[in-house]
Amino acid sequence: MPTMVHLRPMTVHDVEAVAAVVDAADRAAERRPGDDYRPPSDEQRGVMDRGTRRFIERDPAGAWVADRDGEVVGIAEAIRRGPFWGLSMLFVHPSAQSQGVGRRLLETALAYADGAELRMIMTSSDPRALRRYSLAGLDIHPAVNADGVVHRSAIPAGLPGRAGDEDDLDLVERVDVSLRGSRREDVEFMLATGARLDVIDSPDGSGYVVSRSDRVAMLGATDERTATALLWRALAQAEGKAHISCLTAQQDWAVRVALTARLSVAPTGPLFVSGMERPPGPWIANGWYF
Image (cartoon, rainbow, N blue to C red; front, side, top):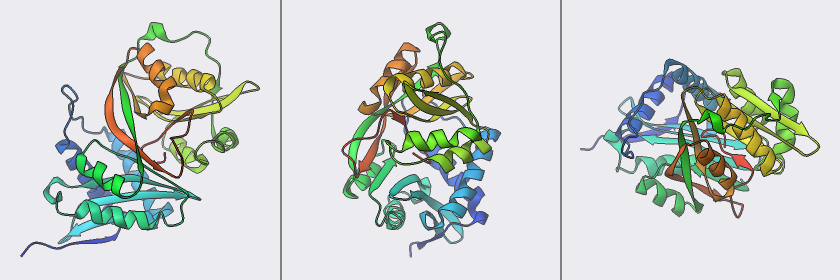
């Protein structure tokens, strides 16, 4: 008789098991040639563990695990911020894939979207995931990632802006009003986990970018010129390889920056959206908090 898998709310006791499922699924994922699996660093694992605990505390109705005889074999984490809902993570251990576990996790996470005006999902290129999210009623927007070592001589001189801090969260909220909704509390959490904030606040335009040593984590701006300057500020601080995720046609300004910086641009999993005709812009999504 097949072993039964049941879903239950995620608890703080599942934090290590969640990381193990994500790692196992990532190891097994199909990749482009040369895009080898890289295990998370101790710092990245620490941020992930803190983030998982925050999902459990902040969005308990969106945090679920699939349990098989006491072993966690699947996880789903979703956020709700007023009228916005986003699926932050959905992973199934390779030993439990193609058994309906992902579908059940998605259905449970989607219950947290009841009444939401805007829904988003950043996904892999797995055909099973694409089918699942399309059938859930979201529209597909093809996307690319940008990776590589920044060509330092391409960085413009005299970039406007400054380093930001918690005192700039009002600016974050003000900018986000015209995008997908405020990410203020999520930016505050990211700063608490060691991320960097850069801001521009001038009569000609306002915006912010959140970055870590090797990746641009989140960006929002009132106009593309300001967004371009902020993205360059983040890339100028990149240590080693830089990474920018999930750029759709609405973020073509960011693709142009990436190409000028000599980063490699290649297709990745699409962004699924419902509740707006196209993704917001100028804007760069965060994998967890959009």
